[in-house]
Image 1 (tube, rainbow, N blue to C red):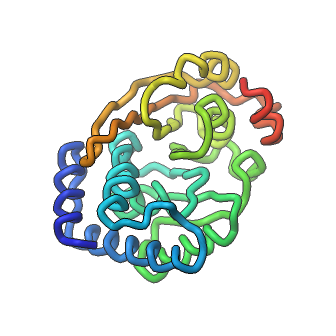
Image 2: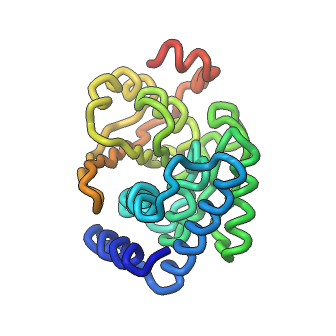
Amino acid sequence: MKPTNLEMLTTFCLRYGLLLDDDMQAKLSSFCDMVLDANTRFNLTAITDEDAFAVKHFADSLSGASEIPVGADVCDIGTGAGFPSVPLAIARRDITVTAVDSTAKKTDFVRGCAGMLGITNIDCVAGRAEELTRFRGRFDAVTARAVASLPILLELAAPLLKIGGIFVAYKSDESELYQSKSALKTLNMQYLRTKTLQLPNGDQRAVLTFKKTDETPKKYPRPYATIKKRPL
């Protein structure tokens, strides 16, 4: 990654209270190279320009870092090529991240990159979030970026959280919040706050944070086809 992109990323993160040291910058730069190289062989990302990658993958992923509690056990659902899971694991050494994706090829890629880069606080699981019953009630925090609409995400995230755990949803704005009122009530989730920000390229972003206030009713999550057809 170009030094100018690393400088931009470091400045952006400092604005939101996150310090990227030299080791973190080196790992982010190497991960960028790995994703772009692998992308020539199989589809990982539509963003192939390095400058755009630094903004739309790294800055965007790290914009939610401050919402994750210290020492949290985190699940990232729909991680894809490793976003936001890998940048978060690199920049927040205090947390542990379980990166979940339904495509084994992607979780294998993320696992391989983590091994080569010496990122020890990340694990990868191939599977659908709604089917991971062994993880029910395990996590302190769940993240999701560019996966689905907010009511759907809430149903996928809530069962994975401990009571008191938080869900961090990466969105472009708050427009889906109103239509999530029923899901919040049904799933015993509480809206806490929205952090609005501007990425270095001027794009607007919103990081929405929710808290689990009580056990998720056992009937949730439903099969994904049902969730998608009849969101709460």
